[in-house]
Image (cartoon, rainbow, N blue to C red):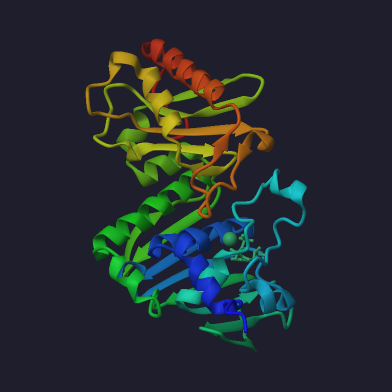
Length: 338
Ligand code: ADP
Ligand code: MG
């Protein structure tokens, strides 16, 4: 008898969850990104104990069709890509079909949803390998409730930090999503305290003001520029307005917020000697490019991407920032929309 056997679906999902679901903030990220992909214009996030006890995300997106519910929580099930070509032209935030399966493997999940047609409302309850679907009423959209995160993976539970640290991770991710989708109204409430509420009127500057503060938003300079491959727009702070960390540098590539050390560097380079040592600007930079130039399938969380023409993009960014700051005194404050 051989000794090799296939792992159970639950166990392999728990292993996969290790990569995608690290902490409450990862659950929030996946659920909110799904809501955005489902076309939601209003997304509300309610946490109990920074999400450790409960995370609830309510959206007014497309909802799950009753037939889709049966398989949505299996691994590698997605509605977002179907061919190899699609993989190189991903337009949605998700495409790996892993998040729901991973979350359900490490928490108790309840989903209420409807596609807005009569009799289409359903409730799905999942715990370990058990799933139960019943009829339920719900307006068009979905309410996902995730309870007792990591109840069955104690090592993960131990790794979590204090409630306030976990909450700041959630706030960071929700802020970044809010900056990426000014047309979506996002609300974040923890233990009854509202932490964020964006209007969702598609005005980036107002969203920035809502997330940081109005005073800061008024000190930002608009930037814009392009070459054959890249189009860059957004806001950067005047050199006098700085922060002690790089957390206020946000980059979006084709609508996806990403982390990229080289882009941070290129942006800071554009400030030249105008920044004090140890101080960093505030910036929200939106970059548009042919999806073929960016590989988002580098890491399961898709925070890191691989850029084909990174040095060219860095050069362009540095020069746009430098030019903008060169004319700083001629540019009025970014007040037009406030
Ligand atoms: P992915 O986002 O990579 O496709 P997920 O496991 O996150 O994988 O979700 C699986 C599928 O479930 C999605 O492709 C989508 O069709 C559906 N789905 C997930 N969340 C929502 C939602 N909030 N509203 C409607 N459909 C959803
Ligand atoms: Mg997803």
